Image 1 (cartoon, rainbow, N blue to C red):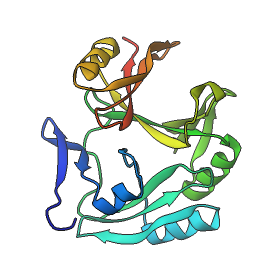
Image 2: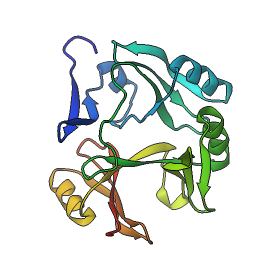
Image 3: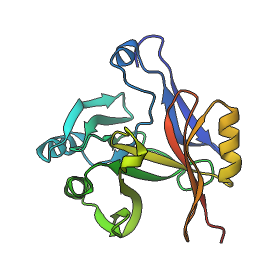
Image 4: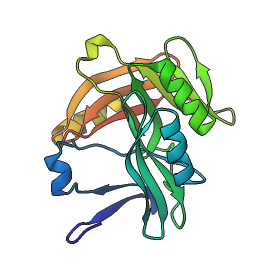
Length: 216
């Protein structure tokens, strides 16, 4: 972080779940929109970055140290979606995941699912699950995220990773988000046999989704 910049860690029940920081003037001048960065843990950021490039990805930012907490880079996959390899040192990542008030799922929306499957399975060793309509990313047999093809009716939506935050009640959370200046891209709706979701943007147009699991 440069002079007069601040990095804010977000906590739930005393455990870190994410973070925020302000974009600098150069980023704003380049037209970079408000967004969430999505980090994927790797053994070596340098190795992961080199491999991503060999598979058709682009290093938007070369590997660099984040003080003594970790090492990262910023990668654009072959379809245009961005993510950050993270080599942990003092800080592994989120300490809470998959609970109310924390991120619980990450989804790649892309124009080319086949190219994305080849890229991510070769880069991270992920396995493929799901069906013809929805791909699940798996690691060690455990579902860790998903993938959908961008549909024409969505409009001019670029390839991107979307983070889902778990909530107790999607409808109530959507109304609260609107009252706080957010907007709704996809109104609350059910996922059969799974739960309920909505897609929103915060007051600065940072996109995210909400997920309410099916009651047990």
